[in-house]
Amino acid sequence: IQIESVIGDMAYSEKKNIEAAKEGDYELIAKLNPIITQGNRRKEDEFEFNKDAGMYQCKAGHLAIHKYFDKRKKDKKNKNPRMVYFFDIEKCKCCPYRDGCYKEGAKKKTYTETIICDSHSEQVKFQETEHFKEKMRERYKIEAKNSELKHRHGYDVASSSGLICMEMQGAMTIFAVNLKRIIKLMNEK
Image 1: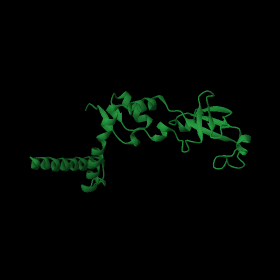
Image 2 (image 1 turned 90 degrees about the horizontal axis):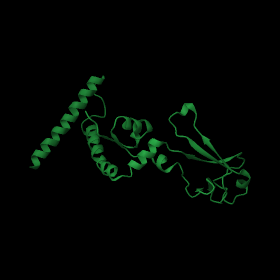
Image 3 (image 1 turned 180 degrees about the vertical axis):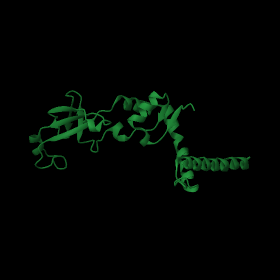
Image 4 (image 1 turned 120 degrees about the horizontal axis):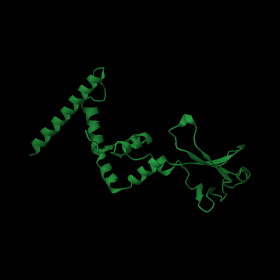
């Protein structure tokens, strides 16, 4: 079978799948997790990037005093690297916005930004194209069909053990659903 595209939800947009799609010469129609595209910023108004200084600043206007590139440990091999920005703790202690930002007795105040990899950057650009958006509009049909297979035809639980039995159950379930569709289309004529 020649695969042209694979359509899935956010669970399929992990880095391994994006790279596999590139190597397999097919397109992956799956939105990236918003944490990757927008970052993990829950409080967007508290920290802003100052392009001139190349540092983040808090809402009180205090710039980070230095930054550190964290490549991530070997045990977290699939994690993207991060840039950690350190703020002057003495300024944080007397800041009017310290409630909810500075914890009393803390030894440091940091803000972390995840740096997205090249494959994620390419996927971000791809998911902004009209082709991607058009394909994603078709995705609800796939989910509806999967739901019908699982809930109406018992494909949510294996009726027998073993891979061959599961393949047989899948083939029979899909055959039954397709047969229902053919009969419905014939009755409409």
